[in-house]
Amino acid sequence: MENESAEVVRLRDVWPEFERRIPTDAAAADAIFQLLEGQGRIVCRCSSTNVVRAPGGRTFKCLVCRHKTWFTANTLLERTTNLKGWMAAIYLKQNRVVFTPAQLARLTEISPTGAYEIQTKLNLVVCGQINDEALLLQSELFQDAICKRSRETPARLHPVAEELTARGAEVEVDHTPLNTDSVSPSCNELSTADGSLAVVEKYPDATARREPLPVRSIRSAIAFIKGNCHGVSRKYLQLYLAGFCYQFKNLVRAPDSLLNACLAHPPITYNDLLCYVTPVYVQFPWV
Ligand SMILES: [Zn+2]
Image 1 (cartoon, helix red, strand yellow):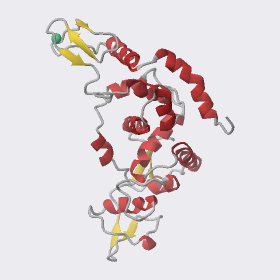
Image 2 (cartoon, rainbow, N blue to C red):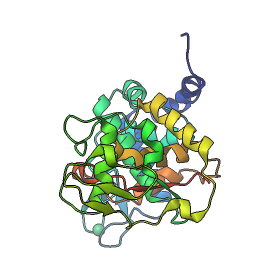
Image 3 (cartoon, protein in one colour):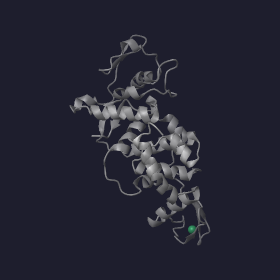
Image 4 (cartoon, rainbow, N blue to C red):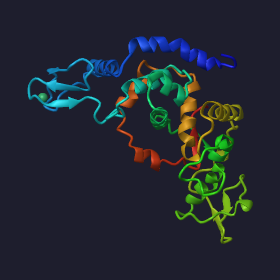
């Protein structure tokens, strides 16, 4: 295919190995069970480890008290039906392979919506691992990547207008219409429609750290989000920035570290995703 990016070629390079290891949902369940068993985490509520499990099953049965346990319960993978899709996304992300939800959906025969949800939840897990020392930047630095609407986007305005309401929300919870002409992107003040001046000072000013802005990295992140995800809503900007840094930051990772993080992470509900909103200052753990 013409114009095929290097990332797509790389995806094709690694996909056969994943397909060989995890051809089905049942194989995915087996792999997760083996990982947990190797870590001594297959334990019945009665503390017995004397259990049996049918190949491919999501449960094990205790031979002492006969209790049946779902071994992905209370993890990110709780109640997931497309386990192969999850394992594929985790495997590709762990190995820094760039993929889109559409590619994941096609390769693992899940719905595009399901693939998008997997990607968003994985980004939320990765986001939760960001060190508190990570660079804080004003989210508006990334506004060129914002071109999708969300439930936070004001009616009849461009998605980037969400930036203004997000800043306003730091001052007051109600959604007073903002006078966009009077907002200066370089200061923390904004005018509301009634003419009053609000000052945003809940978060520290990132520029006050006197650290040089990682301009090239910011541009790369914007280009990646626009090119690979066709942009993002402001609501989920932080998650995509975390995903970008996880993808490209050259840190040594322990094998299965992302899968282990998912198995240590509580379930993320649809409502959790709905309620998530990128803060005014985003963590950008690139430098
Ligand atoms: Zn038991």
